[in-house]
Image (cartoon, rainbow, N blue to C red; front, side, top):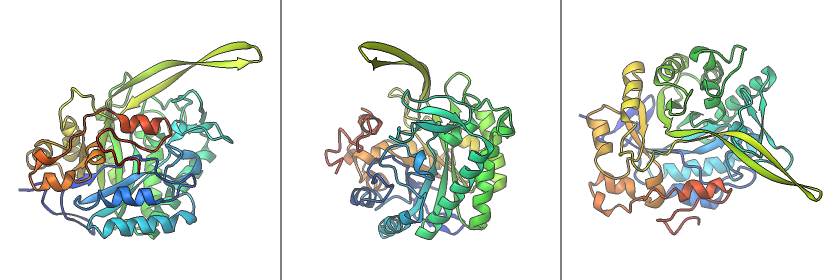
Amino acid sequence: MATINSELTIKKMSIRNRLVLAPITTNYGSQDGLVTNDILCFYKERSRDVGILIVEATSVQSSGRIVPGSLGLWNDSQIPGMTNLVKTIQQEGALVVVQLNHAGPRCPPDKNQKHGFSPSNVAFRPDVEPIEMDTQDIELLINDFSKAAIRAFKAGFDGIEIHGAHLYLLSQFLSPLTNKRKDRYGGDAKDRANLALEIVRKVRKELGPEYPIFFRINAVEKIDGGQTLEDALVIAGLLADEGVDVFDVSLIAHGGFKVLEDNLKVTSNLKVTSKTVLAGSSALPKDQPSGANVAFTAAFKEKVGLPVIAVGKFGIGKAAFKAVENEKIDMVAIGRQMICDPETAQKMLAGNDKDILACDECMKCFASIGKGAPMACKVNKNLPF
């Protein structure tokens, strides 16, 4: 029987245990998307005991960053720093996967550009205008995902993860909530999957049959009109046919549309403007138990039959053990808990939960990067560095 201490093999990946460091946006990168010493320090101390470390959302275009300090693989100058990061992590015994992403209209505004690519003009922030993508924009995006994947391979990553969750750009194409297109990239679940399928197809062609491709996907979006589990499973089956090897299963735990007002000074008068924006969060509410997403992840395992990663407050307690042992989940990912206590994985594997410095779910980590600042933590006073 598998446990979280058990080894796992996926293609050529020999993984020492079933714990994964979830991709965590730190805002510790440089303004040019380069690896910094803070990035190296953050990942080094969190790679000592996990089986796989997934490096935070790394942009495939300079205009697609989640935060100003997002890492990037949009040009070759970023490869050397990423190579250094890979070696730093692998020296600690973990395998390392990089998550490739485009934030779409969730990107921060740039002084030269205050818009973001979008499937259907749905806004996510008042200071960024969503621009509906045309076929030329889509073709460029597909190529840029492929080029970023090749750069990741050259940097030595053990695999890549394509980010199709959390209402970033690919997720927006997959969701009926944000995709109202009338062309071949919109429609039912199969048609909304076309962009993701074309990206995976091109990446698989470029990197060959043996290179591991992970895909992060929302199992559900708990917003009226959001993606359902049934649609997500249809999409997952199509992605598996194109060469995805592992599904990293997340969700939108809560959210909705809201009206934000801006007060703009126009000469001596005050002009009030408003914009309707969509907000959604992947963080489970405090009243949700550890492992609340396991059933969704198990559905992917049963339907598609490929390795799966579950996430959702697994840092303390027996939920991680039960997920692997009872629900046959292949891997469990830990995010916020590893921010506040980098030794969480070691303590879990040794059965020393009582020694873990617990995350109190204050959301300071989310709040700090939301303001464009380096990620901070109420419990871990060493962050930011």
